[in-house]
Amino acid sequence: MASTALFWILAIAAVVSGFAVFRLGSMARVTFALLGSFLAVAGLVLLLGLGYLGVLIALMMVIEMVIMAVFMIMYMMNPAGLMPMAMYHNKAGSMAIAIGTFAALAAGILLVDWPVRRGSPAPDLTFALGEALMGGQMLTMMTLGVALFATIVTSVVLATNRGRYDRFGDDLRTRPADDPAAGRAGR
Image (cartoon, rainbow, N blue to C red; front, side, top):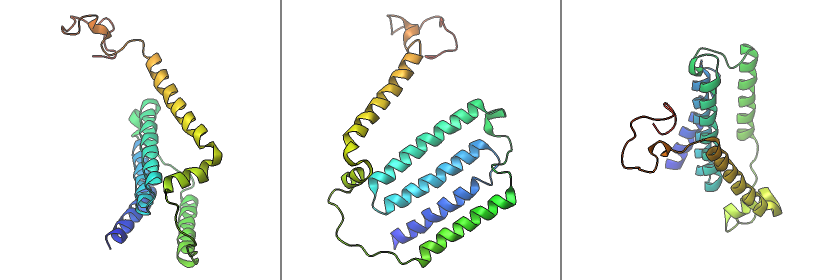
């Protein structure tokens, strides 16, 4: 009973926050509404027993939406992406398409006969999912993921021309009188 209630709470939260993407008036607010929708979907995937996939969706969407919000706040023409704007141009047409698509998908869920399970689940669902998605390239993709992460960390380290404690010099116990690069990292 508790899982059914949680399912409906997450399902309604996903739909409402997804609808809010088209109703809110700023890019920053829209970004966090979309994040809320994705997190509700990740919760639904976790509820289905797909722990790896649910956590992966949550981690990817949080990182993606926060990066998107930061870049919008930095580069939007209006202050911090908080000025009024619209996410769509043809209001009536886009609303009709969105509601029609939702109704068709919901009708499909309710009207189509669901298949009956044949066989039993794999002993290790995470391995089975990885094998189904990647086939024989799983080791390649894992290595590529580590290499990409190392590349990101290395590029960030190389992009900063001084570290957090550079202004202290060799003596880290005393605070320097002035910062040679005022207003920069380490302040």
